[in-house]
Length: 257
Image 1 (spheres, helix red, strand yellow):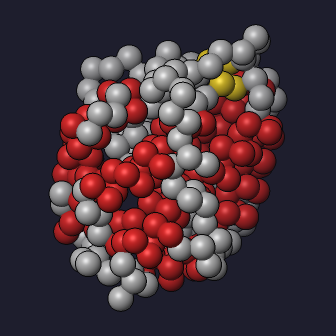
Image 2 (image 1 turned 90 degrees about the vertical axis):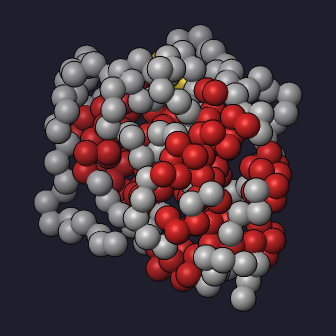
């Protein structure tokens, strides 16, 4: 059976970008199970696509790309301690992941945790007229069932400013403890991107999550919410189209070594 090392170094089909170096180090130290490594590579790769799209379409929306990619690459790292949650339900891995990252020197802003000043909540309505639930799915669209090295020169938790940029949050996201808590107040766009990647890699569509993303996009761009919804919907549809190959890739790796 394929090993965790094989999952980390795999460069076949589907093509997957390598994980950030720091994430690779942590997964090796923690003896991450093969299936977990495979899953993290898939989610990281989708998060990479989402980050590319965000930077190209919304240059005015500032978010920490390196934090998003690291978060996608480590969001389920707590499953090294709760291996049973790789093949069954459970949320114990979320707090365990936050603790593991902190214990291995990852800054709290990137590990996640209660009580942090994490993000400025999006207003209920913006100048673009965005309101919660304002972006219903396209008629006729049926919901589906259903990896560059980390720049060590950057400060952990820094968000580079830009003239005229819309700053999403005063501190970057901490994904291991929050990737499943995207509906809570104060969650930043970086957290939402990781949560979105963790759904769309297998073509799972979550309307509430997508509407939260659309709110942030419309607020940043000044365009109508419906226009941003259609753009996001097209992207997620294209990403979800490759879900079968991703699922087959993950399933090829055993839960245990």
